[in-house]
Image (cartoon, rainbow, N blue to C red; front, top):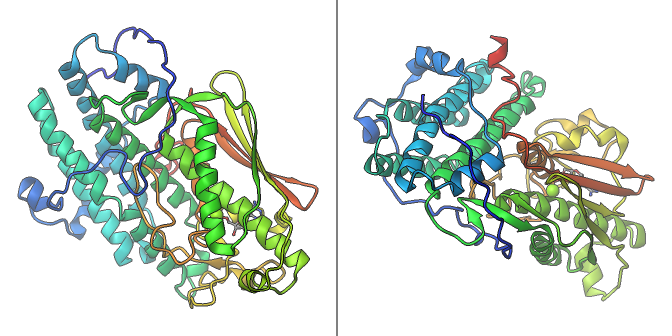
Length: 459
Ligand code: ADP
Ligand code: MG
């Protein structure tokens, strides 16, 4: 095989740059508008059918080892110009040609191992077909040897990044439909499967976008990695977004303070940090406003309070940036929003779990969760509205009636992002009423595609 990262790579001095988030609603790497990627457009074959389930090549590839890379390795590789731009592109393309089919095959394997009731669902089946098409297209492409070959390869990658964006919606819809099935629905355990699918999707997008933007020069960036990201500026940007959406939702907004090691800088993917900070800050603001309203003006709606020009006092949300050694940064977000009942602590990590009650939706409680938890707060599951795909991240707010909360993807997906390069997300209840969320970002560990070959390893 081709060696992707070769030789000793000279570390260049990291240049300090300002944090510039990607424009909202745009891919980190602008995708090309291209005809849909099907068997026919790619290699003139017939559209995939159910026979693809018996395709031996999926098994063959799924058993191969993936090569994980660290953020540092991606940056070193991107900076290294010892062999020239074209050799670098070819080497990077070859790495992806090796990795992508394996990573896709593992997800195809995961899908094959789902219960029939799930895999036969039209939404889930459409994901299977899209991934199978991509798997075959990538595996059958000739080895990239020149910049011209790479152009063709990169176009296929761009199309995949674009076309796989709605796959998250399809997955979410499929999971919701399956979970609402009588008898079997409640018994379906799909969180491990969704973890794997979404983590692998993050990894494929990072690798693809890194390759696509490898030779695009952008101050302070190597590909899509911001080499010297100011955590404070990222927090400030997301505090602004959070305040806007909280104001729109409730007409009031708590103060948010930013303290700690304000000059902390880390190499990181801005899109990933933005996703986590926005979701966690929204959660803290929602808890603060709803809890304060309930304790100070029980039964009152935010709109009624606004009309009556009644003031409510809102305790501050605090963000503390803690710079540890070795690129180990923790952002702690604490609020006094009433905390989470101990009995609910496991549920909040489930995909689709939310305590938002949407009176307009008949789909509330399709998971039967509130009846399963008679003493807990109402547990509505609302997976369907989830939207896919924004520069390696997921937009969970566009097109929604309630951009504040209600999808139940904020916590589990933020944890997935945090864990992606070896960090983590922890909830620390403090004295019942308060809650602290510690989001640790590290970048020295290799990215991972799936959880220790959760499924394939068992075969
Ligand atoms: P959503 O915000 O769409 O409901 P999340 O995954 O972000 O989904 O959160 C799931 C649930 O966890 C929320 O509905 C809420 O009940 C609870 N939660 C999250 N963060 C907090 C917090 N800071 N304080 C109290 N409860 C919280
Ligand atoms: Mg949330």
